[in-house]
Length: 390
Image 1 (cartoon, rainbow, N blue to C red):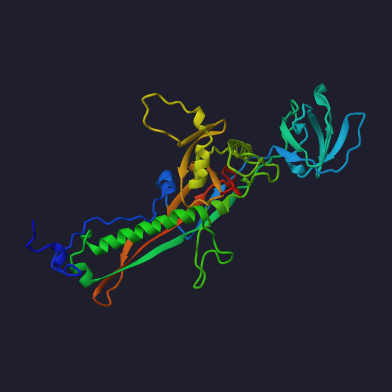
Image 2: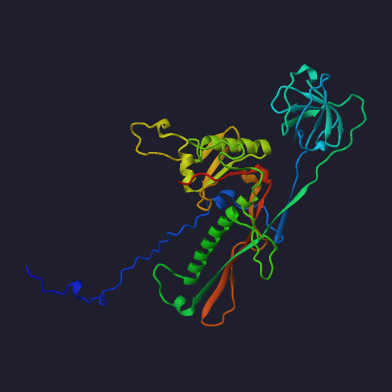
């Protein structure tokens, strides 16, 4: 049967006679999620200065190390040992060398030389070596003796700097007046977009930020920026096969349970912190998921879902929530005590919109905020880096 009517394909090259069919939905594919900020939550307080400071303290150390190259056997079981820091010892201390069963009693402390009775209490002797760890078990005070000299630690002041995050919004009066697809108010839409970008950048700086090498507080020519988590972890930095840290999976540098547990154990030994958060990017998250082999997962005959996901990791040294953040470097795993981490705004400077004076037929303003990272007791946290990314 022939067709004699007018078809849509005859309406012209650009279909000028037909009404547009545009969905009122705008899809955004760019990543802007901030899982670490969401996990840490809102801070308990705000910063009050562009230089934000906090105090940290430690207990008197109960470990030291031998600082002596050679040793002469002493038949009387009395020996003088040079140590790294003599002020950590006092007369009456019971000291264990390394992991040996031997216990030594300190009878004299002069500068960095301690005199000890070896094989105290009939404990078996052991070999001493330069750099050997000395653990102070405790002090045995004499009954009725005068009080010993007071000992104490000094609190230390740590600091970080606030960083301004800002984005400008400018919409013409005409753009506000016309009808736009998927947007009821162009100015509000632009505010939301810029805020998403700034939140994304805030999490990225919390992880990777670095303060300038000089004039950290900023100047007319130096931009003030915060030090992030990666920059501030100094004590517990580990890499596969480096400085006695074990190799990774297959003897290489793949993330493995051995690496993870060793890092958590060493962090636990270095501080009273409790690691409860593991932050990784997508590649290392897949390695974490692989810690549980598929053959070990049990499935029922009626199951229709395959799960290869590890969201919580529990070890002897803590129960850890696994947070997937795309801003963590691909070769790095962060191990955090989240109770000691706060991302806080400068008072009155959390993200907000600030209108700017109009200079023409447009509405202008800034979405801005000023934030810093309070990262307490860096030795309570750890990172594993130089992991394979292939």
